[in-house]
Every structure is written in C-alpha cells, then in structure tokens.
Length: 111
Image 1 (cartoon, rainbow, N blue to C red):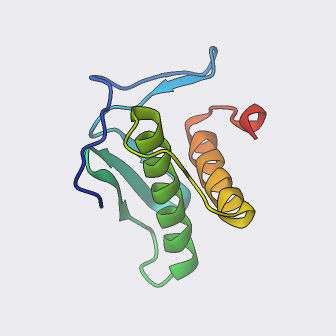
Image 2: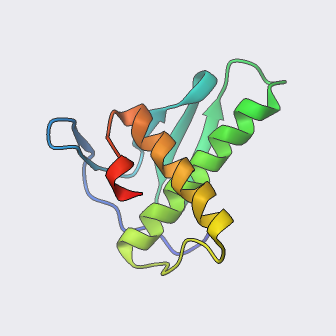
Image 3: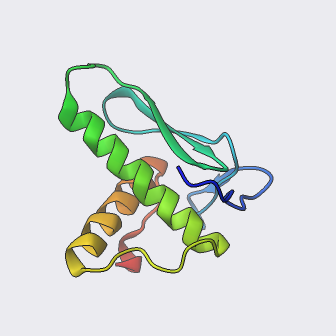
C-alpha cells in the first residue's frame, strides 16, 4: 500500500437507480468466494474467503482490490495513470467492472 492517503468521502452511499456509488473509508464490499474488500485511506485490503487453498479466487479478489485502489487514487488526484499498455488497461478495467458488478453498478458504458 502507498503511504499517501486516498481522499475519500465522509460516508458511503449506493444508488442503483442513478447508477452511482460514494466510497468512504471502512466501506466493505462482498466479492467472489466469500472475500471482502475493505476500503482504507491507504488502499483496499482483502480478507475472508471460503477456501484458503483456492488461489485463483484469492488472486481475483486481489486484482479487484488493486483496480479499485487505483480508481480511487486517480479520482482523488494522487495518481494520474492506470496502465502503461493496453493489456494492463484491460486488466484494470476488468477488475473495476467486477467490483462495480458486485455493487450492482453498471460500469459497461465506461469501457
């Protein structure tokens, strides 16, 4: 995790009708296979999981955490790039899209 804190909103909110989400510190997002993403000012942590031996599920949760952290850092101005190649960008976009899908947010029009 990076040391520069992410500037987050004061409270989380989710509105599926307007297709919007505000992400605050300590927001928890339930994702694949029992994993939980917890948003912190330093980044996004992964915890939980149904099967400690399922490395594929863990790696997917880690990818989503990294993608969400990058999105938040770009949104608050701490970072100004998400990728240096089309392949990196595709992986990042997939990770963000997956997280938004777990929240019920349609992210497809951003692609």
